[in-house]
Image (cartoon, rainbow, N blue to C red; front, top):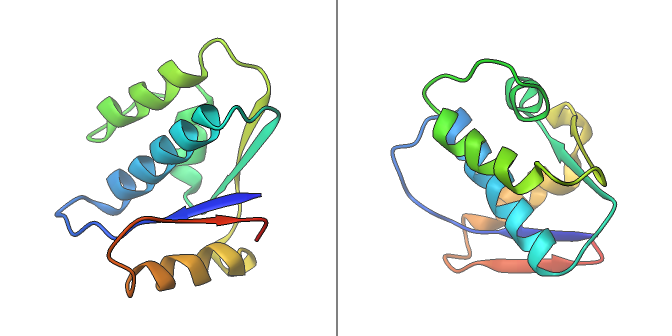
Length: 108
């Protein structure tokens, strides 16, 4: 298991921030040579848009980047997990507020 936190002040919408997080997760996983991947996200909208060819809205350019990384892969799943059920991700998100630099958590 690999998790990464990063604090980045911006004016992005919640969906844009979630999509940026997924895009970064994809890049980190693939650059580390990982295969058979499960990405758990707490945005049901993003989960549906990223895995289906659903129409995109204001964050479409980011979803397109995610899709382009996944287009020739069949060894991944993106799954919606309610925020309340994902305590590790919630803890790491809170931790990123006190760590201004990116931090990678391995074997959480």
